Amino acid sequence: MPVGALNEGIQTLARDSVDALMPLIMQRVYESGPWTPAFGGAADGTITYGAGTQVGSYVRVGALVVAWCNFLFATTVTVAPSPFLLLRGLPFPARSTVNHRYGGYAHQFNIFNLTAGCIDLTLRVPEGGTTINFIENFDNADGQFLAGSAISSGSFFSGAVIYETE
Image (tube, rainbow, N blue to C red; front, side, top):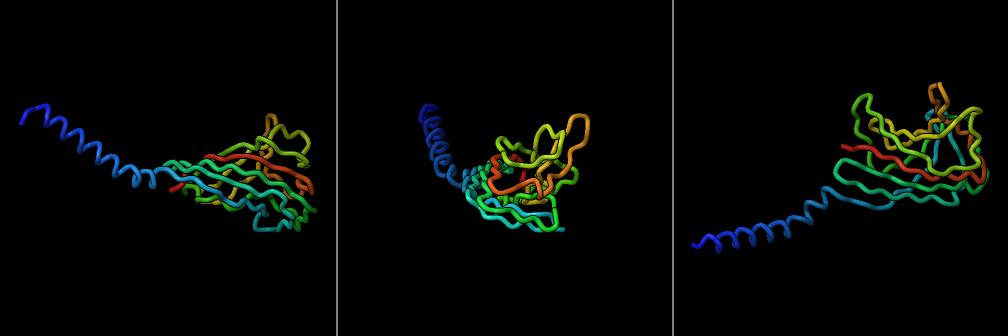
């Protein structure tokens, strides 16, 4: 068999194999879709609210997940007792590696009653969790969890997290 014909046969086989396998590979490597964010408190309390806007979407590439959401508190917010604020319902649990931190940012939030001296609000996904913790950050001091009492009717949040899943 001439080398050119053999080379052409190998190329055709390779191309056909890739074309056939690519959809199967992409199912395992890439996924996107909606998720429904829900606010709640830590184990020591609850938050009752009326959601006006409650939208989330995600993209997963392999073990890496990027999740975005927008949330508007349309009606009065009741916090009893004052727990730390959590956003629940991430589409995949974070990898459960000890001391592995995953984070994100709150790129828009208003009508949040932040602690005096707070310079920004960051997000953290705990190991093995499907929740987002809100962390108030301060100059020259450790951050602290955002209390549920920091939100009120009309509070708006928009943000994203990046984390690894199993």
